[in-house]
Image: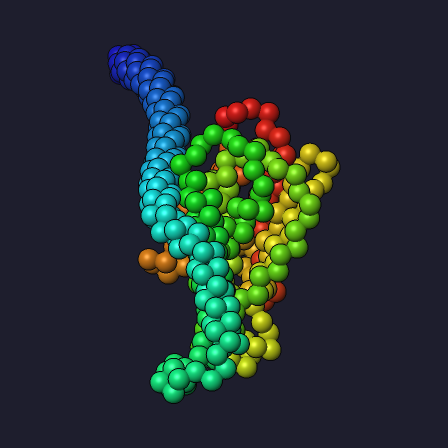
Length: 355
């Protein structure tokens, strides 16, 4: 009876263990299934997060790019409006100056003739009356008649040269002021360069600490080209202004003797190549640029100048004018402590009237 009871008890225990083993196996399977599902969910969630993160990064990059484009466009619009307003202002001032100058310049021819007539009359009078009355002799000595006879023609010649100089300046102002002309025209590229140099003449002149900046013009015989002259003048202005700024950066740090010994120079060379292109190379012997700066010279809003002295859009706009507007090329080469050179290449003929 005792042995039979033991077998019965052991059988119950075995069945209980088997049931628990089955339950444990089921629980383990369920746990494994849940773990697998959790891992799948976690992996799916990570993938979704990664995808959303990439999407957000892409959207942020797009937004940053759009914002940069908006800033660039705004700056270009402001610059274009400023240059257009400047063009209108300069054209108006040039017109107002031109009218009285033409009046003076035109009448100088008559003044010269009248002066020659009066001087001839005085000589004729002196020939026939070599011994005038004492009061006439006294008055001639008082006004120094001999000096007046020599100096008056010189004064008139100086006035003629001065008015002619003003007329040339006005002509250059009117040529440079074509900022708002968007259509292509056939022009002499040298006129635009010379007009820009004339506008910048005050910055090229000698100062107390340094001699004048020497501008070397090495012009080839160029054909007229199809271009937007006002826009090209803006490019010339930007490049030449940067060259002058770079040269002044060196000049202010040197003594007058050093500046005389190592004069500042801007060299402008023009040429024709391949029969279909013209090239304008503008080089200075200033401080030059390191490679990291040179590589960013055409980036919008990039400038090495102090706040208030540079917006960082001049060269960016110049690049767009040459490359996008005129289907040309604009390159910058620079060596530290030797200088910088900008090379503009433009097609002689444009294949379209708009760009």
